[in-house]
Length: 276
Figure 1 (cartoon, rainbow, N blue to C red):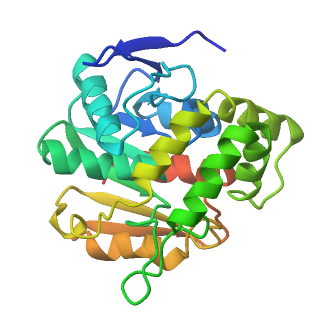
Figure 2: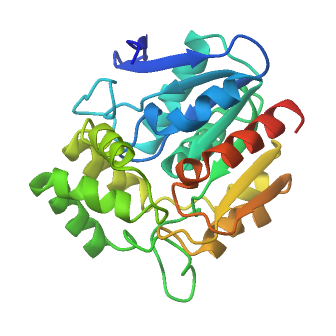
């Protein structure tokens, strides 16, 4: 595996990344909470045949720095902007999986819709993880309350290895090879447990519902019909409330549909980035 390159954010954090492809529209892959850029390894080469692909590790994850600060979605959105500016990327198709969606929503809220992002792909993320009876009951199936968050943070600190196993089991249902499962686990274990807990505490209570109708960027929402992380209707809500959005429903897809159905995912990203 090639050594990563690095971009330094405006607060001095080194962000690891790789580039693939030499021509076509720019596609930036933004992985989810506890993942890494390598979670896209089965789809990157296909996307790179038609696009210039940029995949990076969030701070606190993968090969990026693990600072004691910055465990907020808004800071990760600022990191994304620093990344795009450092590489002089414009008219980007941003592809966010899970937490990566929230990072793009925060980016849009903070920096507007004419600032480097051109199109958005949102993969299996509801606009609010917490659940509130009578208001919002389509949030996370796992971390949907302060009590569940407390338990998750304890698990991360006390048994990160066990968390990594449970995390995979809760995001995929189709059989994967033992080598693939071991690879995904090793990437998860690169993340800082304390940072993950603090980041989830911020992420899980953010409500992006009011923002969605204001988004005018062309958007594609990928819905895992069999996602264990969210009721599929919570993800469909995103497609229904972004005026320019269209939905791609994965009838057999779980939360990590981009791993389970890498070829379909790659083809849809390419088609959306190139054609729209």
